[in-house]
Length: 223
Image 1 (tube, rainbow, N blue to C red):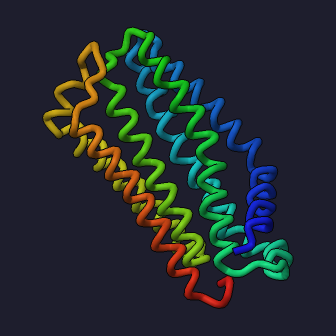
Image 2 (cartoon, helix red, strand yellow):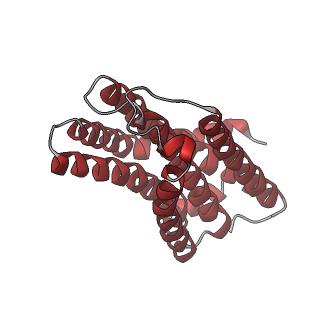
């Protein structure tokens, strides 16, 4: 494993996409701010904007950092570097997640106190964190799909499926008695169900990354 070149490739991607990620973070903060305006319409616009920014930024990064690069001339330069396919895959998976988590982290860390100190029920916070981590799971799946396939079509289909699943995920989580019954509560209830779901999501991220790395380690070519 060429850790020096992996770090260089991650740094390259950071310089290419940092402005986009910081821009998305700003949009996310603005959307979170709209949620506390005492108007249902504005709240709804803020909520939709927040989800759209979190999902849209991950899709933008995953598609461009992996698939688009393979269609551009810079990929020829990268394959000429002293790296193995596994090094390249690691730079895209780890680098992509780290870069995305800059935007994701800023939005989540800012949204939590915005809700906590507003008129909105603090019972929303566990649901918010569960959904935010689920989007992180989806981002991992999208990055890994791009790394494994190198196909725009496969990556786009994966993105569509993940977006549809997210809508069902929200309703399914809200339907769990120990979570849904506390959403309107004035206090945030972090019970065993919440912790179990978050732990399961983190485990899925680890499994997806581990599986992708294993598959790429068995390949001798970049594509």
